[in-house]
Structure formats: C-alpha cells, structure tokens
Image (cartoon, rainbow, N blue to C red):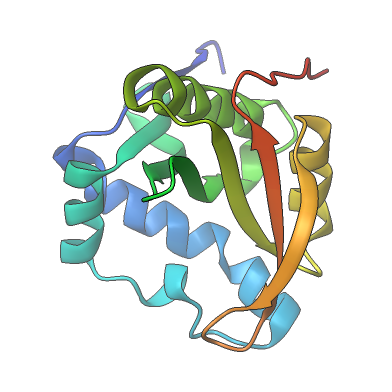
Length: 165
C-alpha cells in the first residue's frame, strides 16, 4: 500500500464514510445473531453526525479513506462508555482496533476525567472479545440488548494500558 494508517479525531465531514464503514463492519455481527436490525445497521446519518459532534470520536485513515472508527462518552458516574469499534475487514488483524481504543481511552481519561472504561460486545463475538481481553478489559457482567442479543459487559480502569503485539 505504501501508506500508513493514521488515527485522528473525527469531524462532521467523516460522518458519511463512518456510516458506510459501520454498515459494512457490522454485517458479520448481524449474521452471528440472525438479526439485521441491530443499532449499527439502522443508525441514520443525522444521528451519527450528532454523535460525532457530541462524543469523543476517532477515525483511522488510510490516505483519505476512513478505515476504522470508535466513539466514547462520559456517563453520569464518571465512567466512559466506548462503542461501535470497527475496522474495515481488509485491514483487521493489524492493530488498528487497539490503536483506536487507546486514542479514545486517552482522550476520555485526560480530557474528560474518566476513571473506568466500559464496553459491550455480543456473546458470540469471539474476535472482539479476544481484542478487548488483550488490551486489558475484563468481563464484569451480561445484559440483553434492546434487540434481544446477549451482550457481555467489559471494563478496564483508566490508566491500565496493556501492550499489544
């Protein structure tokens, strides 16, 4: 390829690319659960633009192409909720997801005072679970999503950065 992937804050101009990437990346999740009405697949462009403007939102770029994204926001109790981590299927397995997570965690901790990071993933999402465990997240509970998908809740204290290979 000759180019390196860069991580930066998302802007409103990225919203359309993020939405298309999210739709592509979450097809596999939908297939795992036989449910194509999961939030990432039905989100509107307007609601995504609102999230980009409101939340701590990062993208991975390869040149001008958005090839990954993650978002997070502080909850009322000082925890940061991180969500919808996605990396283009052709670039998965190269550490981009871990880099996006580190960027979101650093910003949420340093700029917003987050003391703990929380995220959810489907119980059958083995690739996601491997990544989250590798970067220091631990399972703390389970909950059903509004769509009826059993979700695993994972947490990690702020400042607990784990080296990734």
